Image (cartoon, rainbow, N blue to C red; front, side, top):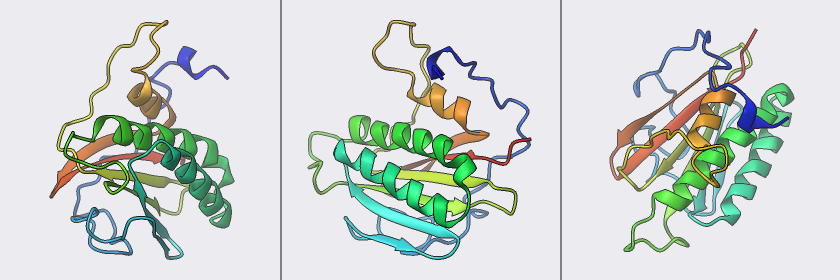
Amino acid sequence: MNAELMSSERHSGASWRRPSLTEVPRFPGGRWADPLGGTPLGRTERTSEHVVGSFASVPDSVGAVRRLAGLVLAEWDLAEVADDVRLVLSELVGNACRHALTPDHDPGTTPVVVRLSRADGFGRVACLVADTSDRAPHKVDAHHFAESGRGLSLVAAFSGEWGWNPIRGGKVVWAVCGGRD
């Protein structure tokens, strides 16, 4: 399927509402309000409902996150949302690695923290990616022949809802996949 030709309004009727930071469940490795400080770089921690991993801000991390998501979703018996989750995470982690670094950050030691959570009993998965930049993500209207600029449009197309929140030391961009009719 050619995702570039898909309408970004694919899930415009989604009933998922934007959660506040206080509604997002606690994750292993620390409080949600401090996702950049809880899990050491290169580590992954799991519970039956959540997984958190801290990755270096390098391109190879995108593939590592995709593999982790595939394994976790298979364990959670949520294979039906695996393709959407992997695509969304690819875009969010890729954006974090590409846009969130500043000249004073070393990509090999600057974390991108990925958290997956079963959002509810209806097959929804919350995907959260935290990075050290406080710059807000923004969608752009990329031309058909543009080589970049479609990432957040893909996130919007393949998730029921997405957004971002500032956090101490950076931001978190989140999306909720699955649970569609």
